[in-house]
Length: 386
Image 1: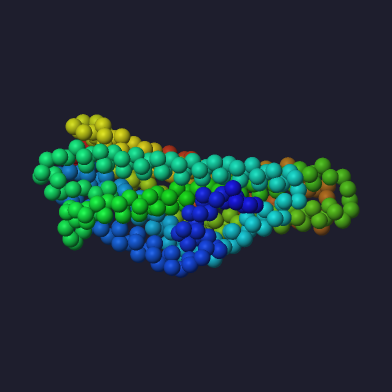
Image 2 (image 1 turned 30 degrees about the horizontal axis):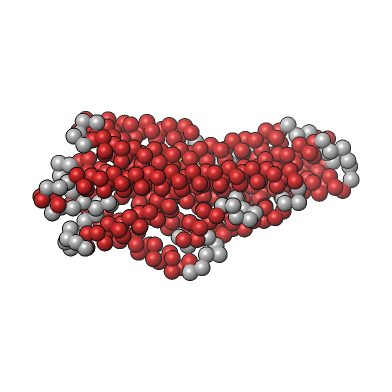
């Protein structure tokens, strides 16, 4: 766990590797390198899918296309975060300031520590599960390579990642070199995918901790019977906290709304393609190995979509907590100038905290259910055409 932060070491390391962390060294060089590598890789991946889209092996095409779309989503996430680097710096400064300002209060610090522990567990889970899914995918792919012992198949060696190159790559040692490079490169891409979804979960948990502290301050103010200047200071602190929560949630929405849109659209396609591969594999000769290779990947994509939608649901519920806390607060017992500050919070709380996908769809558990329904509909259409 990093000192006084909602971001743990594993997540911070990933953000530094991809040039996202505000104090990351050689950030511009990292951005240029990853942009070049990802763009080049995607060109070869899409080339493979386009050249084989008319082939009879639809399962192989969709298997390669699903991984291609996932890598495209990773590039999209990185580009958006790089583009909104200044906004992300403001977000990082806000959570650092929150940890510093709340460290003096034992109750506030404990709330933030609890959220930080939960954030660390979520981050470790995603990194571990995505890593296990990746190694299982690679291991089963290598096993399937080993089953092809006849000479005709050896001339068309398959790669870990479906790619089409403008040169001959099946001869040794070129083939082995490409496989090793693909393994290392895709491992970093999987790390980036896990870090990106863990990042938004961590930021939402931090917003949740600030909402909990805000509601706790309102309860303390309700039980406060004094009429001295300290009451006015507490009210001013509550108003300031509420404005910071709104500003932080808007900054998070600004950075992640287009990421959420891309993930919303591409995850529907990826879930659809992987579901189709799993369904078709049941009737294939070597379908069990294919299903075993794709099923952990299918679970990982679903977890990614679920966490994205759940963070939107979580933010909305925390906004409703603010509205409920202010509604039950006895603001009319305050002095007129103090009551005006609370009324200002009431007016601002009418604006719902939410996370959207491109400002079109509000992310919620209902949105996740709609994603699954849409994917299932597309699977049925593909299976009917197969």
